[in-house]
Length: 149
Image 1 (cartoon, rainbow, N blue to C red):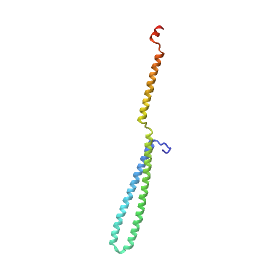
Image 2: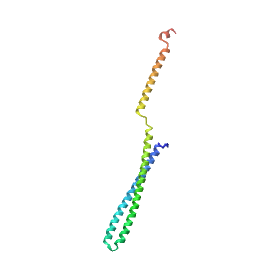
Image 3: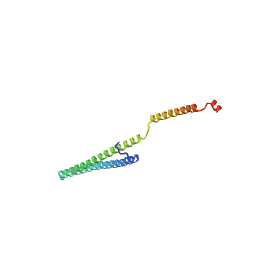
Image 4: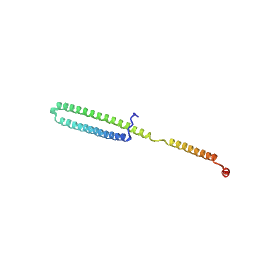
């Protein structure tokens, strides 16, 4: 453990918060993927249109390719950044889950420990009862002595 002791409630809240952040980032990744798909589709449509319009072919194709390339690179970088954030958040969540499990594990006592403690307690109690009975018997006056007194 890190030395800090967080209450399980706070850890659960942090895990829940990280889950929400991960879901939000995953939605952003999906949005970027959708944008990339839309961009690919528009690129294909633009290229088909340019092929039909051969007059300004060279200039338009290069411009369109450059635009496509730069936008695709930007979207790839965005997707990578979101993926890294998701990975980081997932690692934090895993650490908090582990800390929560470790915290709960220290609260439980094993069955062997309880069984051994119970047996020792019963042996000590029964020994004490036996000794107290013997002590009473030796210190107590015999029936003959009681009659004499």
